[in-house]
Length: 102
Image (cartoon, rainbow, N blue to C red; front, side, top):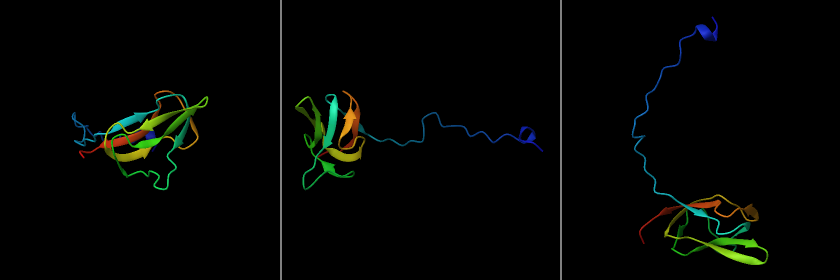
């Protein structure tokens, strides 16, 4: 018996509305081109931390300037997509935030 003679795998129909999972996530992007520097304070941010509106996530440094990267809503820092010293482009995703009411 060859694979060509075997029965095809069963087809599973997808639900048109997806699986019903809904995640409200917001994408934080680089405000400028340059090197991303994450916050390096004693209480540095970790994934899963609750952050306030305006919380400093880090900076993008370029040609002697520093553009702050700040949370635009209160929420949970779900994932950092850039690490310290990564080269980033303007508009490049840096972090996922899940908004929460504060």
